[in-house]
Image 1 (cartoon, rainbow, N blue to C red):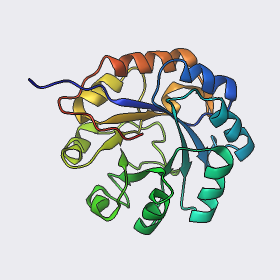
Image 2 (image 1 turned 30 degrees about the vertical axis):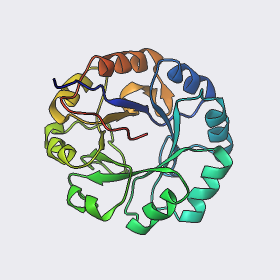
Image 3 (image 1 turned 90 degrees about the vertical axis):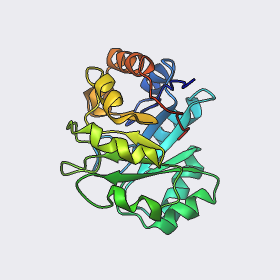
Image 4 (image 1 turned 135 degrees about the horizontal axis):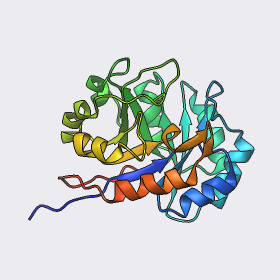
Length: 221
């Protein structure tokens, strides 16, 4: 008998310890901190360390990086105590291998409308892939919805996280269409960049946990 699986959940772009703890109490699988100077959610390593140190066991702390060097990423990993790394630019496959050799979970971002595209997944020996459309000026979903169903075939071969334009109001539809192993949300649960609306976070998590994917879910964090 086929079993239904619930996607994992990451709340990304946290900037305050108190909000990170409030989000963590609602039961996500991962909390993300952004280390990208052009992002309105960019965080100092000191604040990120405070967040990572405060998180309860069982929640994976994820650092999000864009086109940074191995040494830069590892300095943040070691200082903050990050458990996973998400690469969101045009990083080379060798960087993924280097980071995984450090016993880190590594997620590689791939995009529907720009490089690196979904057809390049086999080049990267990542633990999973974050898939989004790639619209907008900045890396990330830029709060824009897209045809989530176009990501579904990718999941037949690779574990993937769905992102881009997700919110409490549309995540059920997105999961149904894409059948992802996990979902990642940031702006869709915010009052302003980096400031989460805890009621929206609660609703988002409740919606995801009422969803099911029609295959065995793969752990990405």
